[in-house]
Amino acid sequence: MHIKTSEMEQIMLGIGNYSCNLATHVCGLYETEKERDEIISGFLCQGFKDDDKQIYIHSEQTEDHFWEVMHSECPVCKADKENPGKLDVKDAPELYYPDGIFDPWLMDTAINGYYDYTQSEGPQNLRTIAEMYWALQKIEGSEHLFAYESRLNYFVRDKTIISLCLYNTSKISGEMLMNVLRTHPYSINSGVFTVNPFYEEPDIWLAKNAPQYLDK
Image 1 (tube, helix red, strand yellow):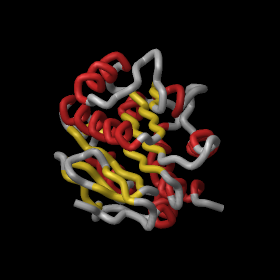
Image 2 (cartoon, helix red, strand yellow):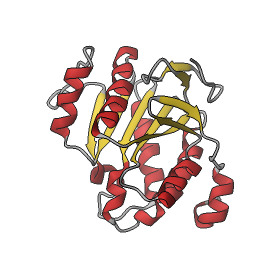
Image 3 (cartoon, rainbow, N blue to C red):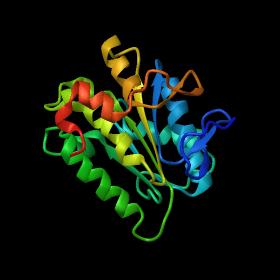
């Protein structure tokens, strides 16, 4: 089933039989470790099939557990911990708060730099998937998480990227869940990929909640 998410190239999502388009920002909602692992392995396995550049950021599970699941569930996986190939695996602090502080403006610089790096040898699709569990650990600046998530919708526009942010609904508050939904135009829940009716465009969400992070 195809859900049109942009005017960009159509790709298989790797979740169920869904396809969408590049330049898309999605939240993945789950309650159990099994659900989380199915989303991650399905999404990345499809990326291996399509020869996409990929990055996975872990914070709820260990890297060793991730590789164990990938090698079990993804027969076309050609990477491992010592030989990552087209899949980069990062620990959340390395990407989100390398100096101990989370800053949406610094994230702008980091993600734009990483995207440019992935395109340096020629155009290619980029799949990113991140466990957002780290935001529950009271990292300095994590109160600005959803300003970053909202701004990410600016970032993905017209880029050959699909970005999937994972949230454990059994561990986050109802208020946090609503902010997840308001900052992601599409969602995955119980294996279903759908348009998110609660989504607010970044100009609207940021103006109401974090005007200091509106594009100048």
